[in-house]
Image 1: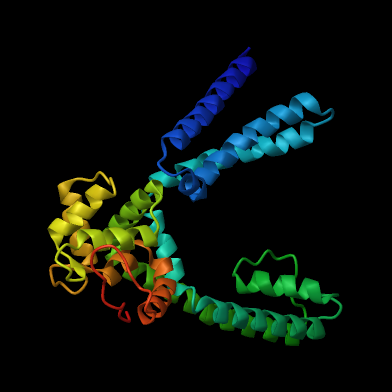
Image 2: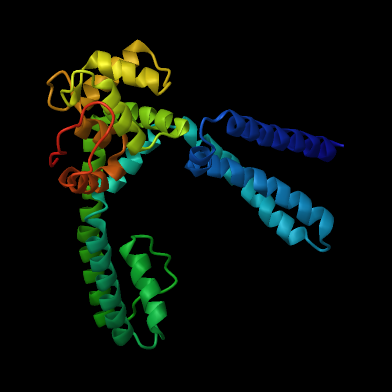
Length: 308
């Protein structure tokens, strides 16, 4: 009886999740932006997991292993659905992105150290470590300071090599930890600014706006043809975009985007804040379009995008 009750409750929850996703899709201003959002892709995967379990269980015979595998994934997908509630996850992602430039070189050096010592250990302990893959496994376990104890050097030379590996690994692994930690501390100091911009980006993505749409609205709202938006013009632009936020939030976003403190926002600052991935490509396109005599638009023409 308890098992049947749990199955009914699970069915109710799964159907509720599916209906909630369908309602959000119907109410979304842009279906394309809705389905390209990572959180919505996770929600859809969770719903598909439920549908696949139903199909496999009732259509195919001897499908217990497949159903069990899909059932194991179900709680993981449900927990991933909660990621949208953790805004500070973006801070961790930003820290990893900030340190990503140095990590490939560090990982390459780490692999070089592992392969070198794996070869030395295999040569020093041919009877104890009978293959290079086994020596590589022992090296990785030793470098990570896990030390399962399944393989132990027996010769004096082997112990000397492993001792050197332990000391080098302890010193070397402190480098990437320090880089990531420093990047996280720097990003954490700007957490309010990053979270505020992330919320605004999500509002624009849900509305389906692109950098081209924003550029057109920027020109329309810039009534004095200054190439910049003051606070009133910025508020008017958000109203045209139908982004409903509080007045306090508008003030905080405006002050965040105004990097130079001039009391106005130019197109560079706007795009760099809301569409950072598109900023570099738009700067190249802007230079080409400004050099073309066919350049025309609604309202005022902004000045050429400056280098960051």
